[in-house]
Length: 430
Image (cartoon, rainbow, N blue to C red; front, side, top):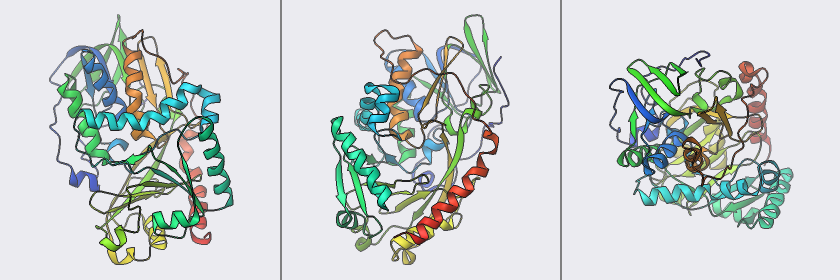
């Protein structure tokens, strides 16, 4: 039997984010009793639901078991940026994972737009591009190198000078930038719940408030135990990412569940909305500890970064993040902040998503390192192919053993110094 320590409990309400206020609650169905299916998926976020969508399209009998609610984790709380690519540039990705992984990760944003279009998902999606913002000379060198790599791989990107960045962002903070026109933005909770609706329409069954307490092989099938019944499945996908517990031994300790925090302003006055990312771009500052932001469909500034390394909510919960935004645009002080929330994203030691095979008929796919909107959605096709042994499937991610990170239980101790440096940089660097 698998199981390290399972701490996940069902029935917890959605965090009090802007997204939860704006999106109507999806219907919730608890497991009615024992079931036998082809594929069971643990986790109703982008990874699990995009996989369920592709399996259901192929006529596979698939169920998704979610401990809380659809999109309760990072899929329903993130910054809403559809960022193409991986953490590294295409040269390194090609070296480490092969050229197919470069193309796949760059095209991942297209998959999001395709799903939204095919299933008419109402999620405020917009393709304004992704802006990487450079603050100092080291940052400039980094984005210039990335631009050269992109050109070698046939990827469209555009370098922006300081004047261009000031025009795009409404602040003179940035020395340069790099625009990837393939990127975009959306309301993440509306999107993940739209994924759930699309998968359900094709025949997938999704059961919420149904935490899996144990998983074991019995005969030729997997048996997943929940408080509401047991599910027998030929294949299983564990898609729990930043909220991974001990269900799969060692998996939790192979990830760093770092908190990312977001504040949302009141709707910007028109004169300010016309200055900040008026063409619908999403932006992130490059660096070890990043800041990211966009202006949503209701003219709210959605501004995120690293805050408290524990659960917190409320507009005053993340003062350093709000203060940095007000340094960029002093007029924000008169607008004010209306929401604040956070959640965990799963980081890996090598900064790549990890795909693991458990025994011979189960998979775990975790660790999207803050790129989950595009990559976790696009990876569903690959995972669906692996779960049903589709002969037409071509692998993108290598299957690797689970490797716990040394001193992983003490990860919060390492985050503090990085945050302190980021705040110092925000205060003293132009």
